[in-house]
Image (cartoon, rainbow, N blue to C red; front, side):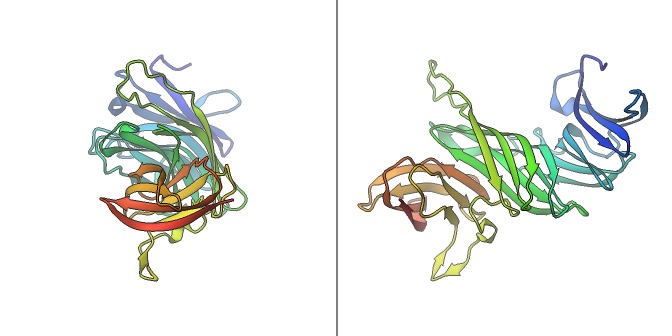
Length: 322
């Protein structure tokens, strides 16, 4: 039994022993968390060895550990220069000594980034899942001051180098927070995750009622793409037009969601218009390298999807709904 301010958050079986990660905190502040790893005899519960923050890092959370052939892979967060956490993937040997670590820094110093899950993919590398928080350029009646996207990052197993980094955002009404609760590797090299897409926006209304959380299930390919080919999305000269986003499936079956992958070169507002040029739907897209999932729920027909920034259409694509 641990003390009342100690919380075991991660457990894994490795080389015939149990490894437990424990968060200790007397002050209830993330910056004061102390992380320790304990090696136990699974038959008796005896503690064989313990290690406390020997990685030259202010580790604030370890939510998940998995065992791999040469050690343990741990997902969590650290606090370094900023008040808020950055995401951490840490690989350790059997004695909890660091093999490598990768800290993914959130450039928005007023918001957190952290990992909660990690899996080994069929190619032997690792994908971590978590949340990426960011401030909006200005207050929005729909989204408030900030958004919180689901987040996947793929890492090289030998070096910890980042292979790809993608965010995911479900557009419906005022959803502005996305949480990933579980992650699994798939035989095709991709991963799938489940969680919630929920609305935490109050809209300045004291009588505002939060809607029920919405279940969220997402499957991506080995490149982290929902829209096929999103890894190729970049500024490129194609028939004198620049590619900022990819949208699909196209054509859609009526009732099917449209997925839009926005690359790293621009943000703005996505506007869907009918053949007469009338605006049907729109949403603000401020996250880069992000896949937006949009419930259209509109009649069959032809539409034009445009990414608009400061009044200028950066790119347009015809969308067909059957």
